[in-house]
Image (tube, rainbow, N blue to C red; front, side):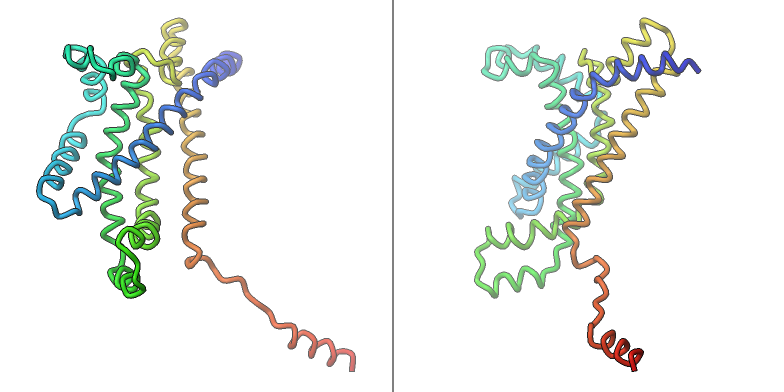
Length: 246
């Protein structure tokens, strides 16, 4: 094992970490908003919205992410209406095509996680909110959504980790994130094992930090599950000290 080469490779890949994190953070944030809208459509009871949401989830969960990236990056430009629209300055850039593909893909998976969290909210909590005279929007914002997030967070953390790893597919459309830079180094040195060991270690470190962050958020959202701090009364201790003095 050439440690000098590993250090040089690590130094080269470090420069690509910001793009990887930017792709992951942007797609996760936008995907969460879209996933919430899809989950609410599934639970709306409106046939058209429910059917559209089911179709969306079926298509994006049933096709490979790589195919979706290719269709967005190479396929959308074949339509004159898109090339002459206001979206073309964005859709002709590989970065935004990757963000769009990652966002739409993660929204399909995350919507099912969020839907499960919404369905897990005890109905008694909603009835109590209604009894207090809360409007429907306030019930959702202050009761339903916080409880649903708490229930869905463990499963959603797996989806976030998957999206960090899925950013490696953006290298297929010329983005120089961690995997893209690793592929370039391999093409120059033909030393695939060492390069991919370093790249894998970087992804592992990113996901380790992400899991720690999610655990902190989960701990913060679950105060009722924490072990109570034992409270010792001062009276018995004072009585014991008085007895010793006697």
